[in-house]
Length: 477
Image 1 (tube, rainbow, N blue to C red):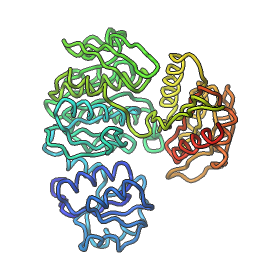
Image 2 (cartoon, helix red, strand yellow):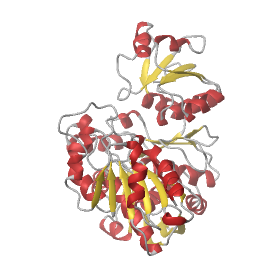
Image 3 (cartoon, rainbow, N blue to C red):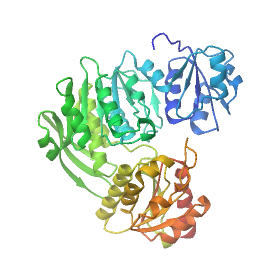
Image 4 (cartoon, rainbow, N blue to C red):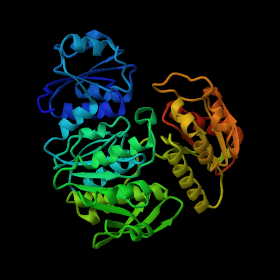
């Protein structure tokens, strides 16, 4: 991609989590940035304040927002249709059109590339690695799929030698990178609308490992069956470092590197004792859940391999306050009929993610000694709902009560017979189907009691309900 001229870059869908991040880095490097999105948003306004030329709505004339035609147009082939007027105009003008992954690969050239991959946990692990490296004085550049609570941004042009980013497998775009450190958090069949078979999905991670530089290191989670198997397959080809629990490390002694010796869960903090190589450190997690402890171990391993001091990295992870939409705390009710009810929001949209979040929620309430978990779940995509209906039902049944919304189709069109009812009919706990968004806060109010935990969950627009539910409970108290 080195022949691509990045002096004037136009990004279609510039307000998205991924696009806005690379736009920030381009602006920090002094490039002319333009773009468009379907609506005004906080990321769009922030980019405009940094000097980007952004239009709301897609039309051909947007290509000249900066006063000149762009030297390259960036798009997401999954999210942006081929008949988008800006794409059509770019082709007519013979302007190169590339994917975000192509642009990100170009931006990382010359840096020590730390790529975080896996079916689940990419954003949280990437974010922890960034915060850890910052605490260790490494000032990495980064591009992540969420907004760091502490940094308040999803991307940064750092002064250090590392570039930390998520490697998205959903469309095999992770194969466009050449990582120096490649982390694989877990592997579980997903995105079968693209890969069609689990075998093809598994293969993309082996292909990713083959993209490592000559001195690169593959980091895998030993507690995940398929990630550990990837490490075992690759250990004769590349350097492999595994992280995980003591039991998992015993199963894979040849590649074990970071071992979580013990975990103690309190109401707000999980204390973990870890051994990293020959060093031992304590990490205090501000976000509950065993899955988050494993993500912290991954981040710590990546930071050490990138040259960071293990104690400073661990301290940074201990100060990590989370990412937007990852078990994000929105507030609590101070008194009245709903005294102590807490409202959270989470991006979980795969059964394994749902199970992990609800398990963490139950652990948190168990440490407190009271309260029930109420989940407001919005299924994401018709194909995923059809594929994993039984698994979603099983995972959601970990909550004491569930409010299930209609499916958020995203880029998919409705399919006959594929509705939220596929999940609801299989659930074993108390469940309410609520197709009316505006009635969800009242529905939750009818289910909630003092000390409960409410979690809005899904990858669609369910996130807007968290604050509305909190307002309803505070108004009614």
